[in-house]
Amino acid sequence: MEDHEIRTLLDLHDQIIDQEDGYWLKIEAWEVGVSKDIPHGVRYSLTLHAPSGKRILGYDNAHAVKVKGKKYSGQRLPFDHKHRHVADKGIPYVFQSAHQLLSDFFTEVDSVLKEAKSK
Image (cartoon, rainbow, N blue to C red):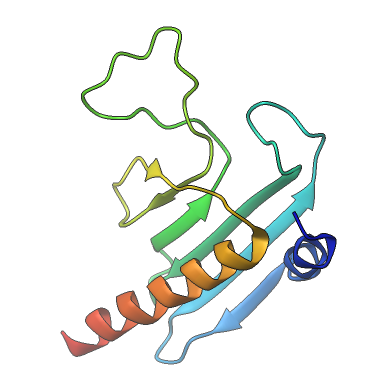
């Protein structure tokens, strides 16, 4: 993975970014030891919040997620995942690079905001 991509993600740590109409983003990212669960060595949480403060979209690797319809024993459960709404326990996200993570997150933020503001 490109070091400058990781550095860009890490440089965004603790950023809160206004998205107008009360919506906002929070980016957290910090280095951790490389492990089987976090092979890229970065812990992250990228979240979009409604004016009420509730998370309405999130990408993170804070915990493993269970894949529906599969048996879990002996399988590696993915840590990289996303939450598509408040009650979503997470669906797997394939982490390719820090750049792709940011691109995917901001693309989905635009889509979620467009839908939320059209209601």
